[in-house]
Length: 181
Image 1 (tube, rainbow, N blue to C red):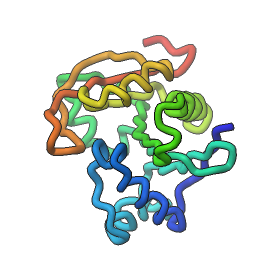
Image 2: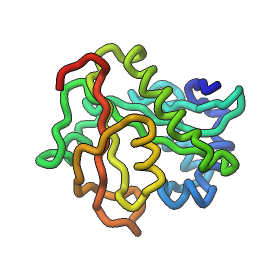
Image 3: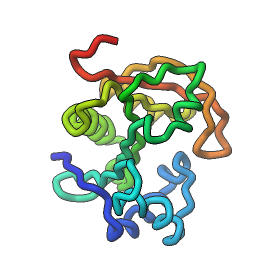
Image 4: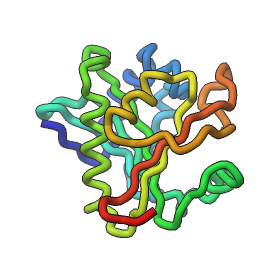
């Protein structure tokens, strides 16, 4: 069973190990010193910023992370999409990783995304859509989104998470069930 809880500061050593895993480091390109992890994940863990960092558990064991946020809380993201993708009022976004390398390629990613998407409609009653940009080069990630029921709606030129990548991104979207787009 997939469950989750808010990431806490006591989870930072595990998160740091996950960020160092080659399959995560390639796409997240995140500094992994204890200080950097505390700096970048601490505010959300303490509730000092509006994003949610969710530790994902499979049968009670930590396996991944999902970051969930409202676009409205990060207007710079909306600005980056301008002229490329319509970001409706109430739209949210996710970022995700499977930290445990033993779980990669087992179908967990799609299950994890689907569970968080479904919960988002309840957790955030004002959410209208979930829009997720992913590097066009990260085939595994965009295939997970497709398997989870999201649809590719655009190609966009966005700043890459890893400077070795170009700006090409695929943008995926799923709308609140029952909404008219």
